[in-house]
Length: 55
Image 1 (cartoon, rainbow, N blue to C red):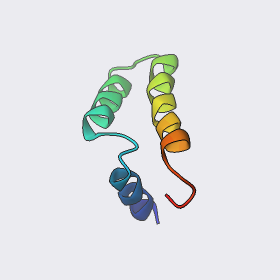
Image 2: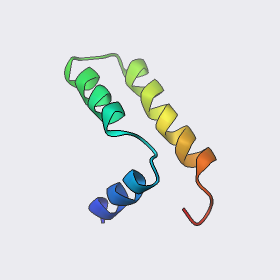
Image 3: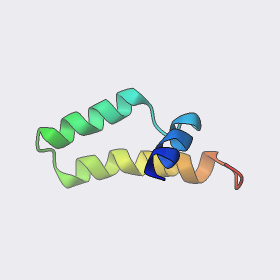
Image 4: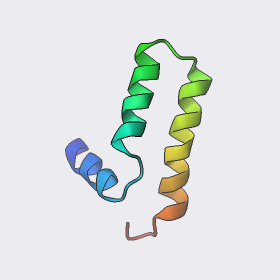
């Protein structure tokens, strides 16, 4: 199920691989929670605003 969700989100371009690499790098380097949340908030915004109900 998780792999299906990941595949769907990749297909709808909710985030790019470069954005994920950046997020993971920041996380592993001990970035502040606010920094990580701002990146995740951008993903959520795309999900909420750019996808229709069927997507």
